[in-house]
Amino acid sequence: MRREFSSDLALLAARLLIAILFLAGAAQKFLSPGDAMALLAMQNLPQALVWPALIVNAVAGVMLVLGVRIRPLALLLAAYCGATSFFHLIPDDPWQMSIFVKNWSITGGCLALAVAGSGRLALLPDKAIAPPR
Image (cartoon, rainbow, N blue to C red; front, side, top):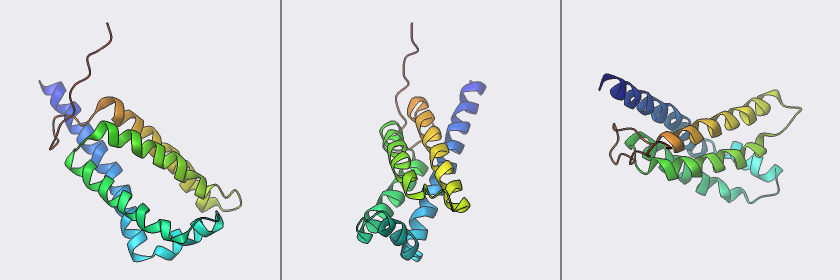
């Protein structure tokens, strides 16, 4: 029982730590959309895409905090982080390269959450996956 609770606490901590990144990303896009718009413009994409990205970040952050549909959300976020990492693939800019690497690290964390699920400390806990035989 104690080991299960420890696992649940670790999964809650993982969800909250990843949620902080997405909620902070939403706040940054809301408070200073020009930064994200500049990256979109560099890729010849519509700058208005900052607003759907803000919504994705905010909704994902809230879902992670609450523990709602974590497995499918985590897979979606892994794909989102992998795809958006390429906006930061600017080899001459060390700061952007660190964000590029950070996005791939978050992708790994999201993939781990997709396998582990929400844990029991969630509004809608994921069902346990039966271990392989």
